[in-house]
Image (cartoon, rainbow, N blue to C red; front, side, top):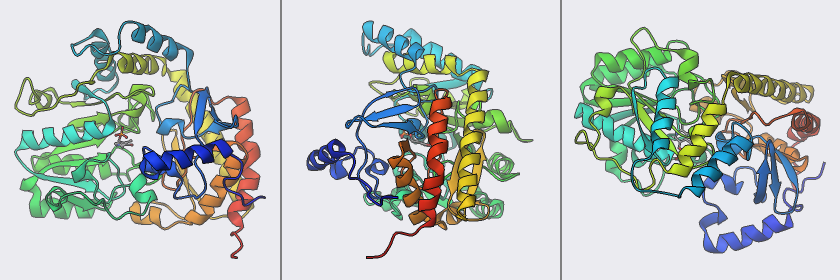
Length: 443
Ligand SMILES: *Cc1c(COP(=O)(O)O)cnc(C)c1O
């Protein structure tokens, strides 16, 4: 097995060189830079079904799926058609349009506790707006979040975040004012006792608890039995709101996201939800929504301001609507089968090479931690062999399988992952497991 990590993509290397001159790190979102695994990120030229094609013409089975949105596969014909039709009618109106109503109706129909939604352009905007709304509704300031949960790059939510923050081992972000972070209490995920303690002490100051419905940004860590119920009952008892961030899990874990799998607790459902990724079908569309009495506090109905020039963009909403309409029961069943097959084969290959690992699930969403034993929180997730993952990652890449370039991310599959794509993944796994088992020689 070659230890070369980048020698095979000359055009990507040269584009990265140019990109670095005009863009910090050469990328527009940090994890794309491959810092966690080393080597040169591949610049993609096109994508179709389960395949990505880079600027050197190399094909890869895509296990990132744009971090979730490409649930139907790349350039799905029906979505492409909807996008072309919408674009032909004009790109942005700056007025209300029918697609916005249709997409909102689709979301409200799928996620039972969501009575109203407001469309925005990114998951970050969705969580930022949900937090502002929760503070405006309750008249309180404090937000409780969990270490390792990523809610976009909102100032107040960047404390102990997962995703790129975990990948880069940044404790926090510079540029976040102390005041913004001071309004945030960070607790360990899945720790009911810590949550009870904080509510006992400051319950009447807490505006909201925000959580990933099932964590995916520290790798996949589902809520432990009773954790969601504890968040719901404590927030209700103390007059705080419960915000479930389903930007990653929404319309992926099930037709109604993680909520569709777990359902309401004895004390009811979350008050507010945030969505993104799948609901945009690869275009910038996201949303937050929930109880109508809370949503009524938003401008122009109420005093909490929130707006967006491109919110509800007609092309983005057409893509999102076509994507959700084609996310049928058969699609969800296919995701289950494909994810199981990949995870089982990866686990078998790693076991054959005695590489410690642990597979965790949230519906069909999964990730593989390079450690033994259950991962219940961010501290557990951090305690893994990221160097072994890096070797595994590059061996897969050399064999034309593109994993997420970080040990702290979920692996994503889509309806486009067919037999050929699966066979490519299965064929690559034994050598990748061997690479993971073999530490690089120190020179
Ligand atoms: C991706 C993600 C976000 C941020 O969404 P962007 O569209 O990248 O701003 C927020 N929350 C969760 C759970 C996510 O996975």
